[in-house]
Length: 462
Image (tube, rainbow, N blue to C red):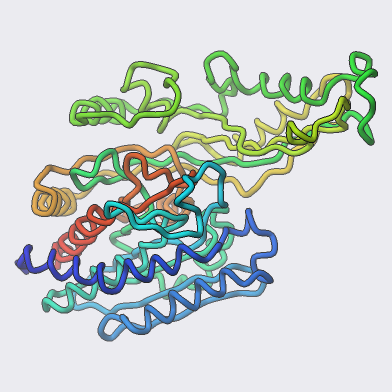
């Protein structure tokens, strides 16, 4: 069905201004950290508060003939399911999450993780762009289509609450709700990013993630640092262990189990991507390569290690001349698509714990590993629908990109439904800084992206 594009954009903009932005403002205020970052998440009640906010809003804006259900098994985070019957054959699954990353230091004085601030049409605060807007934008798109008498396929909106922890509860709900989920023909995920704010972007690959805490112990308690030299430093030992898995001069990961051959079409796509970008995102330090093609491949199809936390190290102002009993580092290892996350994790464990220096006590506790994902070939109708949507609402052709982050649900769906088509997109563009300080949602971009989703769903074939 042909739709009036100008009318659609006006309706979407109005819905965002009236119903979405004010609700996201309230959502940002709630420190609903994912379970990995809030072990007492249930007792603290922030997740229940977000669940109530989302459910109340959904009830007020429930699409025609839709049903809302909430599943919460004992000891697990909840999920929200909104089932909208359709007139076309086929099933669409729309996905997002409502849990958040922790606070992170470095926010500007006038901003904060739980302090929503609107500046220059950017809504600052934790979780608005990653990924609180997804539920509201999905229902906005569906209601706009219904308002314009468009025929829809059956659509199921699934919102989870543990994505930032690696989605450990999702396999349980996938099995529990398998009859309701059915077999999706199209998956729309609004949890990814962009390279600019000038076009509709899709994600064609995601890296996986292995997270864990590496601990080296040398003493039962701290001792006067005069004994150092005889008792080895736990920090020095942990540096040695890290050198087993990473070349500290280049950042290259040394374990073959964490690497994969990069397909030729991926390399070709990166060449095209770099060619269309007029300017590249700036970083606070010099990048490890001045070759933008290599830079994109390092971010999307090569493994990389980050140290994201530490224990056993007092702050500088509290540090005495003490040989510390232990050093503990939290590791975040990004792994490429096509790498088996379980084999990679086992390789990491062997490398870090076998034959420890000085017979030190070395242990590592892993979180649930997440697989990477590579998109299947796009069907002609979907490729045409995305091109039409981007040209209509952005006045620019679309583009695709690999992402360095992880969306565990996409790998689960890709394995379970190999025939499904995917539209992985989102609002996390330049400087939006998901997971970091000064995270923001670019509202004008989010509005146009929502209109693109309207257009793509309208083009879903009969």
